[in-house]
Amino acid sequence: MESEKIIHFFLHIPKNSGTTLNSIIQNNYFNTFKVSWDKNDQNHSDNIISLNNNDVFMKYDIVRGHFPYGIHQALKSGEPYSYFTMLRDPLSRTWSQYNYMCSDNSYINKNPDLKIYLNGLTLDQYCREDHPLVPNHVYTDNAQVRYISGVGDTKPFGKIDEHDLIKAKQNLALMYFGIVEDFDRSMLYLQSVLGWRKAFYTRQKISSRVNLKPTDKEKYILSSCNHFDIQLYYYGLSLFGDRSCSISEKKLNSYRYKLEIYRFFQEKQKYSKELIKKILRYEKYNAEV
Image 1 (tube, rainbow, N blue to C red):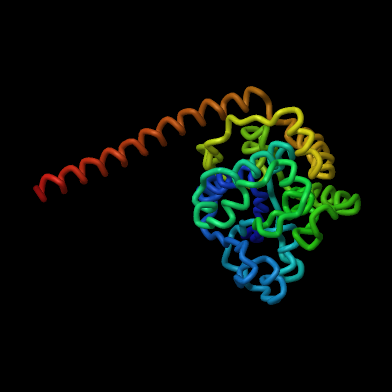
Image 2 (tube, helix red, strand yellow):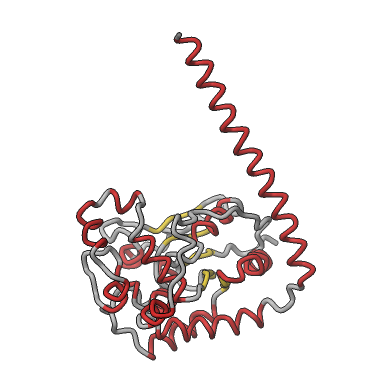
């Protein structure tokens, strides 16, 4: 008897290793639906739900993107689904977000007015005040509670409360998830519960400012906009510890050994492709001379 199809929703919280996880998703799912972050796009989560098109995800194995919990409401009643996501230390996540917004990246460079505006923002201002000019800045305020509770950006900056935290904990308990700070164990856990064929990866989108560490004063500032996220994170750590306790150190070390071999051959393949390109350019140059 054929097993019932389950729609998987990857809830991609920004700066939570989602790009790296997306590379694993591409190796394990054939038909992927990407939810848009643009509210004017029909594939934005709010628009998908409001259109009430129960067949929108019918031909897909997985739905991924930056969207809050709740997009499963677009499914037919009773249709099976699961959510999975990654949690990250809230101070590290917000620090990474701030540095990304202040870095010399392609997104910021396409928006010169935004770049000028951001250059004038201190970390204290970025974390404690609302900045409507900064896209999705509301998610600086307890982003993980916003995503996992389903509140999203419907509440203004600074208005997340205890009720939202409770809802986020309830939803998290129903989801599969990993911990960014325990990434390899998380991949083994997600592989086991989601049935992935393989869970090897290479790190994606490593920031040029990755070695910048916050001072004690900056950590205090970062905590100011993450009061509820911190509580959710520690709840998640405990829950994940219980769920992943069957993953032994021996199994983890074996995975890491295989991961190193995978990365070695990925680098060799990458080098070979670059070498072929150089040879072709050289031959083209000689033919033109």
